[in-house]
Length: 198
Length: 371
Image (cartoon, one colour):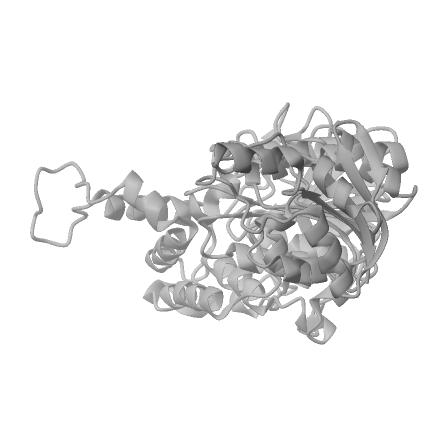
């Protein structure tokens, strides 16, 4: 399992009710269900991935986060997880609002466009950056709204969203992000993980 | 009509009050079972059939000598694996394969015809509930059905919220739409316009409204297929001829196909049953039973739902299936949903659609493991 998922799993207490938005093949869901007795649901847009989840015995709804989150009542989950997908929505702000409406808390992870390799790539190669977390070419990437850890940090603050925990992930190392080290983490982390609440 | 042999029947002694206000008792429910009930009695699946189905889900139907209507999905090692599960299916009341219906006789030994009480989906499932007592099953492992079978699934779990662990409505709706009612009315009009229908008393008049029933079947059959499916299968192909004949014979393969579908249908189906069952479908509006709030229908159940729709089904389209998902999500119910890619139209659930059959099998087997 990806290190990212391990970090996310560590943020969630046992026996909670969790919605995994964009749950893909259900790897994280399965882990949470089996190791933390989590009552877990998934929302996934790809039919193939939904089938993979069903084959794992997971409860998944085929759907689109931008349209289908609205059917869930307010605060109906303890946690809503959105892994590396926020930047792919047409309207990330709306999705973020929906995550925080449906979940008591939300865990959002973002591929960091401020990561030094990304900056380096653009600066010296002069082409759109391709890294482990941003593997696609400019013409076929699903990402519409790339941001940096710093961007996201400021964005949630400006929306009066409470940050419970923010973590910078670089390969296997995760570390706390705060106001004072934000610049450094924004340079050295390829992924940001935020536990937030509205 | 049907010979009584090969039809297993449960006589329900307990009076059943129907939605129309009448009460029936000592009435027969014809059923069939597949696989065997285990000692814990926790492996039973109640399957509900659609408009023209019957209790003979799989294997060779002893009355028609054709494959059962859900042979692709039900059987040893199939999606609903009869090596593992005990499958029960009964003919709906109002039907014509042995359950109490308009071709039965009243107390005066006169065939009911249209004097049979109008029945509803609610009446159907209340009648079938008696099978649980008959087999001594406290809780079913699953209930499943497509189309009108799906309506019965929804009604059943609403009426008996703790009587099934899992719930599988397929290609269905919680409320018959104006378009659905319109197509059913077309079928009913075709039957009643047949001069052999005789106000429903064709048996005593020794006639049969076969022409009308065949037209009803032809019209309905079109609604079960998709435009793309029809086009790919038939296109404008001609039927055993080189060129158009400038007449009204079946020039096109699609005409010939529909005529065939109509003609084989009348051999196995009763015209009055067609009226009664389509009426039951039209009257189905689960939300209305709960003051317009569909979620209320499921508020008392802890069952695990799995809802399946098909991309090319325009009779019970994905959105109508999704409305059920939405109603369940809004009360935090355990619900999964998948829309299966298929160009076989509404009939997809009856056909060899591997993605559908795999999803069904995986859902059942994984849920059973968690038992």
